[in-house]
Image 1: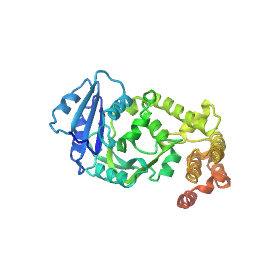
Image 2: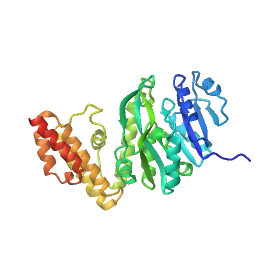
Image 3: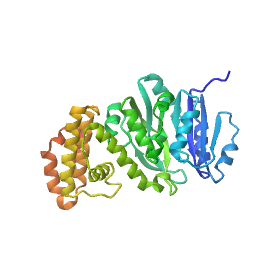
Image 4: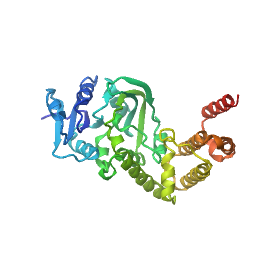
Length: 341
């Protein structure tokens, strides 16, 4: 009788002829070898399937969709076909370091109360050259669970989870392309999630990324995810609140500079979330209040130059600052002195 592998590694594929071989090679080069590699081709029209079929490694399994159904459907297909105790994801344009599987398997083996574990990632260009820029996610389950009201606490392309739990939850295909944010938010509400504080995956930045193609729909899906969590928390909100809430997660990336009106809204909104959570206990404390304090600091920091003095006065007077980490406050004070001098 055939023995099931310890790990199933899933790579959804759609028209990735330029990069898929590098993703496959990075998994075949893993120091941990007890795995199967599931390639879920989601109706590619290029030579992706031919490239996959050129490999003779018996650990590779190819599943082909007749038509393109989207990455969420491809990931659900991987969950259905996986035979491993653990299921790891990698995007078809990304690359895994050789010890990625070994380190994540060791973590989940040591921590049976964790549902999944991610890793930090670094960005690379189209040719695979690193930018020297690392994306660091929180490592503790409390900080990851607190973050889920704002963004995903772990990187999907660097995740490894218990297959049985993924089958319990699955990706909601209606939320594509924010299905990973939705999945990990739902899982983190019940189970512990962790992240290894080491870079084990490289993410490729290129013009054909699905996240760039679907930026508009992603914003709509995220708003729906926020709305569901806010309803559970018992917070009333408007469409404007959802739009402003979304800005909290990536002001610099979106080129957003808060004005004094946004500053007023942010202090009231973050205070309302804190008060509601004290009653509903949806997010772990003090991690949640600390996160709200950090967002308050972020809003004040990015406030437009003509309102910056008022923003700093508001920051120091607000109760939201009480949970901000001392090291951040020290850095803040030094920067204020530097700017003033």
